[in-house]
Image (cartoon, rainbow, N blue to C red; front, side, top):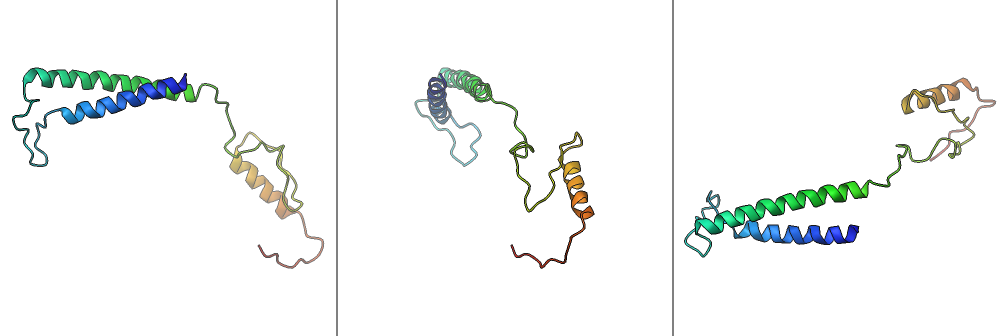
Length: 128
């Protein structure tokens, strides 16, 4: 289903690009006044404007559908990556039980626990 909607989305995008490029330039932003081409009649300009509006609405709807479909089965995840119960402490550190205070409070408590533990003997600095 997603593949079908993506193909429709890409078809809408390509036709919309063509419709925008066929429209007459009225601003003359680059000094290229429209001139008298085959797209100079009023009826054709109205047709292209309406076609562009319809294609833009289709683009918007397919974009919304694809966004909704991508997040349909998404499960909530932790910002840290893995739950605290599955991680192993590094270097003999005591794991800290998660609290409701948040990540910063948990890290602060872990730091306080490490400072409270007195080293048993002097240790040489470790290189990283």
